[in-house]
Length: 247
Image (cartoon, rainbow, N blue to C red; front, side, top):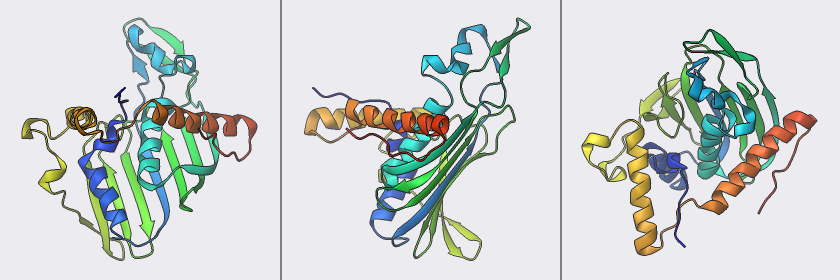
């Protein structure tokens, strides 16, 4: 059975270009990476969307912007071999729009993960979702011969649905934009920005899987990623370093 799950960051033209550059040796052996994402995680919500602050629903900051960010990092550089995490709720309640009521936030709004990937890359992730406007995202990949950096402007909910730009170091403290050739897009110009871009490319990938058997993220991929998220929560609860469970 051909099927696909919604890890659409894997179909971002910027991240696909980044992956190719890494594999081509643009920055040599990758030594470390750091992903910092500061997002306004909805301190005010209409009544019908308060579930996004309830950890028991499975749809919250850790699983959505956190899950997509962690998946993008692992897809690019390798799975976590071991990790330590801090998961905390700093803002314990949010405003329910139009009601004057408060809703208890049981999902985390602060997530820190650090560890070593199976590829020996040292990795750090910070997802910040307190009620500030947010500062966007910077994903820095450091290699023996240079650095590659992905940037996302403030306001984007997640790496999977925002407009990204790619940069490389060309001197001390000097970043130069990296061109994304047109063939990385493959969709009409009308949807080459915003959330439709990666969704459209996801459907193209599914068509390729049906037609040619091309690999796409599937239920096994989803299970593996949720095992990573489980390890993040368990590490925070137990206060110790863990090896995520493998399938």
